[in-house]
Amino acid sequence: MSILIAALLLLAAATGSGVALTRTPRRQVMAMAVNGLVLALLFMVLQAPDVAFSELAVGTVALPLLFLAALASVRMDRRSDRARDGG
Amino acid sequence: MTRRARLLLCVLAAACLLPACLHVALHMPPFGAHPLPYGEAINALATRQRHVTNMVSAVNFDYRGLDTLGEEFMLLGAVTGTAVLLRGSRGEQLTARPGRVGNRPVAPRSDAVVLICRALAALTVLFGVYVVLHAMTTPGGGFQGGAIIAAATALIFLGEGYRGWRRIMRTGLLDAAEGGGAALYALCGFAAMAAGWPFLHNFLPLGTPRDVFSGGLMQIENAGVGFAVAGGFAVLFVEFLEETRAERDGDGA
Amino acid sequence: MSQALALFPWAAATWLLAIGVYAIVTSRHYVHLIGCLSVVQSSTYVLLLAVGYRRGAGPPIFYTHPPGTPAVDPVVQALVLTDIVIGATVTALLLAIALQLHKTRGTLDPEKLRPMQR
Image (cartoon, rainbow over all chains, first blue to last red; front, side):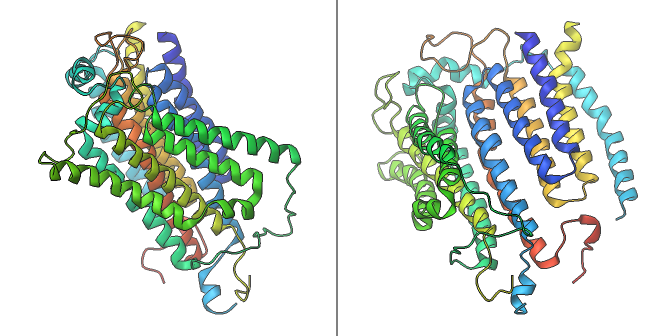
């Protein structure tokens, strides 16, 4: 049991570093989803099923979707000053 | 500040913080044997006092119900702020055309994806409702269940495409769920006051332990949180995905 | 061995905090920076749940076990549970601010933005 916790802590630290050190935002989103999954597993092992549920739904679905939508919007380059000036 | 100066400042701050962190880590009670007086008291008393078997929900909705009210309004504030920021520059109208990046084609969805998403979305919503309803007995509650329901709406987007998705996701309805949920929670507190009890006092009949509808007022607060979280995340999805649509005609995009 | 293992949760939480802050300081993209902020946030989750953990205890849910069975701390779990959900919406607010910045200034690189530049 203790070994499982130690392994998942290590994995959480590793995937967390992966999120932080992935400098390309589009790749970082995928790292974030993996990190969310590992954290959910860790919380499960730490006897926190409620927390694991919410981390699973938020960390692997909601946050990556919001980041991807934001990145898509940035890439489309919608500039409000251009809209104001009439193109 | 230049990159170099920022890094130097970071290293300096780390040099100050690291010994403190190390000191705390070395003097922590051993892992797995931390003294937890508050949690132990709740574990020992909550089932008898509040007739619920999920201690986390008991803390969230009853013992620290006021904190959750604060969290509710943080959620409301963050979602409202996001919606105001994004709608403020975009306007409230909807756009029909998908945005394009360069000349990349928009790949059509395969029938398999549509089929799987339709089946899974229905099942996921059902599961989310199940999780919300079982807050008092087994792991679950408005926060988790609401997030799961919102995740299901992302599946609908994947299966039906943007236009079909927007036909289901009525902005007015989602806004109402979001604000109404938070209002329901606050009204629970005032209802207790109107009945002559302190704010958020659990004055409803508590039911029997291990019953789905035990917990009295906690059930209503839980439903309010479920509505607020599901609606809040759905509003966020709509607002962000609307940002990826093409700009309206005459914008010169 | 067990001494080192006992320090492990605190070390993991500190590491997540440190690596997140380092990446924020050296970030060249605001969306990346917001992602690193969620790493910093996750360090608090790891710390709190590790504090609330009890060796050999079950989850704080007494559906099948009678009350009185050893269970981990529900208070920290309630804290983390609400924070995960609220933190995600606050992250969305930050992303919206970043999008707004990109619309008005055309860049998301902190190096290219000067505070008072119009």
